[in-house]
Image 1: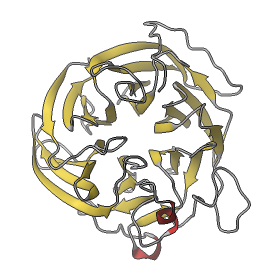
Image 2: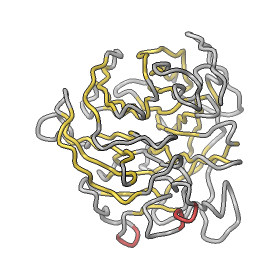
Image 3: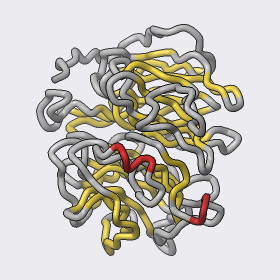
Image 4: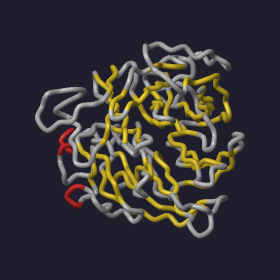
Amino acid sequence: MDPTPTVEPTPTPTPTAPGGGGGAPGTPEVVSEQWTVPWDVAWSPTGDFALVTERDSFKVFRVNKDGTRTEAGTVPESVRTGGEGGLMGVAFSPGWNGDGDKEVFFMHSSSDGNRVAKMEYDGTSLSAYTPILTGIKKSTYHNGGRLKFGPDGFLYVSTGDAQETSLSQDPNSLNGKILRITKTGEAAEGNPDGSRVYSLGHRNAQGLAWDSEGRLWSAELGASSTDELNLIEPGKNYGWPTCEGPCDEPGMTNPKKTWSTSEASPSGITIVDDVVYMAALRGKRLYAIPLTGTEAGDPVAHFTDTYGRLRAVERVPDEQAIWITTSNADDNGGQPDGADRIIKVSLNS
């Protein structure tokens, strides 16, 4: 069990690795408290509020930019898995306006596995639950869970290997993959082999974000040695379980950056001005990783051991700032219910 961190209200960010450039995090500000494992943050296309999921309560909250929040509802048929499963990712339809387009999408564990479901949200409450993709195996751990709409308008879904390593290399399995689907759960146009599978060979990818040129990057939790930042390309095989980190196996795509699992165990990522901001769970820090084209530069670590385990990170619309959620109120973090926070960090130019 990780030790309970000492929280400092106004820490000075201290880089702990060489390199970097652009968008250095400034002084953090706690914008919302009394959370229990806030797993994901999705900003509405209108830009004035976010939806935040709680993994273990299955609740969804509307959180305004000033941190005030109201409960939007719960996601039906959600179950816990005794570990990392439950209510995970959330994503707004790109055209959401609360009226003509009310669609919001969730990734959650259910009695028969993990699934992607669609609901309607009118700005006040959730309704009209409909599963759009089932058949994803669940397990205590390795459930993936991130949802993001890409610049192409399709929904990208990260799935874990459900602690069955062979599934990651099975093209007929939805596990250990990054999926690319329509809003009805079908394979997106242009996918390799016409399937829902966009890339394979993943263990437990939880971070998805696009750079300024529309390239998809993903952060992935390793097993016992190596965590990864990958540049995702359609049809590519990212190696698990044959490879953890770089390897010379034919047909395998190597990561662009790696860390030891004690330094990272990454979850969410966001990209601002071609800098990847990566939340680290076991590493208890925020990484800033500059991108130059298809290459990743030297990471710089910030807020190490200040806020404990970090789960989600998202850019605040129309601001040079990010929101970060902590993930301490469970067995891994060792803190009681209600101990988690949402933290706002301005990005210095």
